[in-house]
Length: 266
Ligand SMILES: NC(=O)c1ccc[n+]([C@@H]2O[C@H](COP(=O)([O-])OP(=O)(O)OC[C@H]3O[C@@H](n4cnc5c(N)ncnc54)[C@H](OP(=O)(O)O)[C@@H]3O)[C@@H](O)[C@H]2O)c1
Image (cartoon, rainbow, N blue to C red; front, side):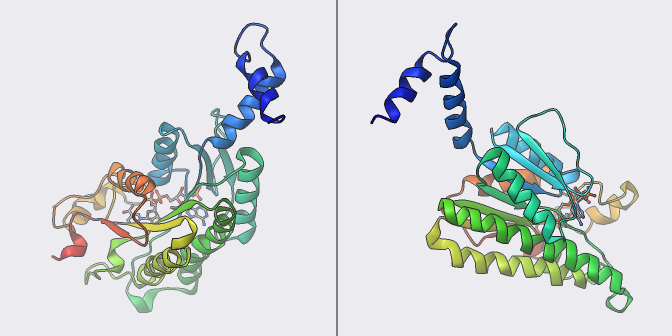
């Protein structure tokens, strides 16, 4: 009682001319701690960049990370640069998120790479890069974000995987994608069950081929033909799926295919 009363009294006139500045600070602090916070990896371009905008439009505060990301003018977007394969990056992202915004409600594991080659042509560098970005990049930051979500008793982890892991194509050999993104699909189900009774949902969006800087325009015709619907996906298709999962409180352990029918058959 004695704690709440003074805050209410002071905050009541915080917006009025001559309103109490301490009251304004206290009220802003309370408000800011209630605003939801999302961490988005691979946020500098493509799907990740669009997710940053979509979550800001929903009034989330955003921690945006990638190797090349730079701080912009919006004070509600914190940019943290680093290689997501490195556990030190995951440490920094989570520490800086908590220091600036005080909480982590959602983690979007979006950073990822895709290397398509016949199996015997993959190099040791291909292997290390795919395991590093896709698997270690998922593991380290998910582990740290989940620890915070467990303290809060709520949270959502959603990862962007790849539909090709569920329906291998003879003309796009990509076993490293199967190994890494397929592993994340499986880990999504494992974590969803581990955390089901503790307020944390864990899902994945599994895209077909999406028009992003990942694909040169001259490849688009070939890539469009890989989908039963006859076109590539748009970035908006993936953003909409992530936003659906964000509010789908009864959905966990879901691998949501957004792939123009690819996973259904050919
Ligand atoms: N586009 C598709 O057709 C498609 C299909 C299926 C799945 N996906 C998945 O969807 C996600 C986004 O794809 P996209 O097409 O938007 O990709 P993109 O345009 O190539 O962007 C990839 C993002 O990940 C970041 N990134 C890459 N390696 C990183 C590393 N080691 N550390 C930190 N950040 C790293 C990049 O930023 P920096 O260069 O600044 O680090 C960039 O922001 C990926 O996981 C991808 O596998 C895409």
